[in-house]
Length: 252
Length: 252
Image (cartoon, rainbow over all chains, first blue to last red; front, side, top):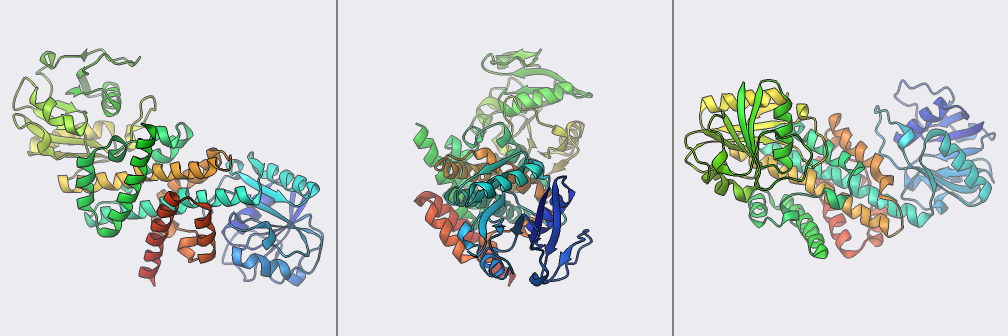
C-alpha cells in the first residue's frame, strides 16, 4: 500500500486525487487545497491548512503551478520525506531542499469535468535516489501502463514538444474557427478531419501522413489561400507552408 | 437508384468507389483509372479508356487532382450531363463547360489502406440548377448524415481552414517528433496528448480549451522553451505564442 498526500486541487491535482483514490494499492491520506473547492467530487480527507498535513505518507505530490512549487514545498512542516512535483516545465530542484526531491509528470492535458483514462497516459518520473525512484515507478505502474524514468533535460524536451502538439495545435483550430466564422460556417464541419488527423498518428509518421498544397508544391492553390486570409492568418500560413516545403527539399 | 461513374482511383476516388458500391440505392456503373491499379479492392467495372465510358449514369464524379479537372472533363465523349468534381480547392467552373457542372466535396483526409467512416463526413455540394442540386443532396444523404449546400466562396474558406487543422497540425506533429528525436525519446509518448487535444474539440471551443505558457503569460517558461529550440523551430514557437497572446489582450 502506497500512502500519498496530494497538495493542490486544480486540474492535475483533482484528476490525480480521483485516480489514486480509485486504485487498489494506493491510499490517499489527504488532499490539500487552499480554498473550499466548488465541486461535488468526493474528497473525504480535504485539508485547507498545511499545518494539518499528515506525516505518515510515503509520497507528497505537489500538483501546483510551476511558480508556486518552491513556496508551497518550503512551507511543509517536515523534512527528509519524498516530495515530488507534477510539472513538465520545472526542474526537480524547484522543490525546497529540506525534503527528498522527485518528479511525477503525467503527460496529458487535463480539464475540469472531463474524465481521462490514466491507463494510457505516460507517467514520467525522476528521483534523486534509487529507493525513491523505485517507489515512484511503483506508484506510476499502479495507475498507468506507460511509466518511464527520464531526466530533467529529457522532460524539458517533452514539455516543449507538448506545447507544439497541444497549445499550438489548439491555436490552429482557433484560427480555422475564425476563418469559418467569416463565412458563417460552423466549426463542427471540421471535427471529423481534426479527429482523423490526430488518429492517423497511431498508424503513420507525420512525414508519411502529410498531404496538401505545400507538400505537393501546388503554388496556385497556395496563392489562392493567401488571398483569403488576413495578415495575421497569412503569416502563420506562410511560415508553416515554408516549414513543410523545406522538408520537401531535404527529401530530394 | 442513382447511377454513378467515378473518374479517378486515387485516395478520394477509391474510397468513394467503395462506399458507393456498398450503399443501397447507388449503383457504380464504372470506375475509370488511367493505369491498372496495384490493389486487391473489388472493382468490377474498371475502365482504362474514357472512350469506353457509359452514357447511362446520372452523375459523373471526377475525383482527380485539381489541375487535371479541366483536361479530363474536356475529354468526356458526351455533353449536357451532370459532371462534378470532389475538390475543396477548385471552382465549379474548372469543369469543362460542355456538361452541367457541380461539386461533391467530402471534407476529410483519405489515405490508401485506411478505412474511413463516411457516415460522419460532411459532404458539401454545389450545382448550377435545382434538379442537379437535389440529386447531389440525395446522393450525399445516402452515404453521410451531414450533407450541406455551400457556394464556391464558402468552400474556399473551408478548404483553407482544412489546411490549418490538417496539413499545419501535422507539421506541428512533425516538429515535435524532431524535438524528441534529439533526446532519443519516442514520438509515441505524445499520442495520448495528441488524441485528447483533438477530442476536446467535441466538448469545448478552441478558446475554452487553450492552456499553457502563452495563454497564462508565463514568460519564464517561454524563455526556457526558446532556448531548447533551433532557429526554425523557434520561429514557429514565437509566431504561435504571439498569436495566442494577441487573443489574451483582446479578451482583457
